[in-house]
Length: 515
Image 1: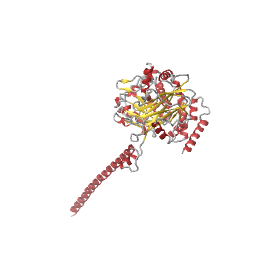
Image 2: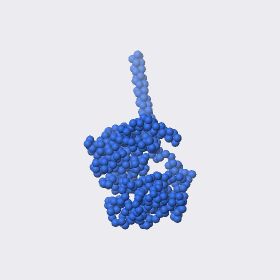
Image 3: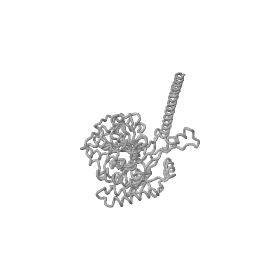
Image 4: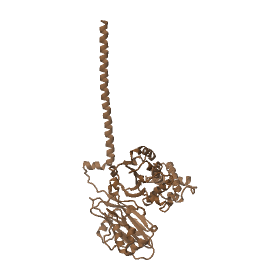
């Protein structure tokens, strides 16, 4: 299977080079061409979306690359777009659905049809999608059309079609589902057209929901109050809402942001920064700096030994960044509440010739403790970061961790105050970022399962309910058909009885007349 996939990718790339890339300087952005020649995952996404039909995938790639150059996707930035695109808050990323997919919000009531601003709106959507694709390559996205309080003046079918084309052509295999919240009945006809645009392969991704049904897909913690949720998030600009790893919110509004904290005195900044990035276990951050050739599994801490023994049971992928190699590469695996496995280790390896400062942040600061969460790593050495889940909490697919790293090129101290000052001064462009998801490992079940557990091990509840509903509908149709047959039988018997009576009467009358 892997060999067939590799062969298919190579054949597609060969045909791309021969048929499309020979003289592509005017048609495509060279950066996109270079990426497709190196990135197997991206090329595979086009093939999968077109059911591994090379000819269809090539046409899709051609259209996608032309669009990327026309709209200058690679050069889109916060400064290249009009400020009002971000100030209005009609389009933004925030929160996760129940499957752990990022939410892309489109607040329809803030969108007004206007030909003059249409291109800017398209570029704004492309900006957010490209921003997400670079940060979370290949990870699914759930689009939420919030149609609360919207009217006909807010519905722009050209804009809706553009958004759909983004996922059908320009960003294949990124769409998890398209959630339409509280669509007014007057727009039913319009969204029948949308179903046609989606096509048969994506029609099942369209979900029409109301205030009660939306919680089937998104938990209340990431739903605004008007949708029945408890999320205190309020969109504001500047800065861009990088809500994956924001400072937690409180009931009376947001706690001071990181930028505000850094403007205070260094001691307070360091203390707040430690709280924001998940409460360090000790105020004086400690870690072991070891040569990469040394055995870094020998730890004084018994918990670390236990965790590493579990991690050594299977090979762990490594993310190879320009400053740090990070292991694991994508997921922190926590056990379920029953299994008791509530700690993970993140291993950082400094591959530069200078000291690298690092921070670890999370989307759920109340649930996790990280030690160390803000420290530095010497050249060629490794640092082990222990991530502990508090006893009262359970890990969730929505939880994320962010590892931030920056090279300390000038000789700087590594005390808490020195690091706070360094993070305040370092340019954003020199900060390496890597994101990690949480994964909950299921507990092993006994060999003798009850009937209820056996049913749970079958396909998902939604599949069973769907099949059961199909059976019930078929049964209902059969009952109706049987009822109709019985009615026709009764009618036929009645008509036959009437016919016999008429024939009998006719015979009787004819006999009477003959006599």
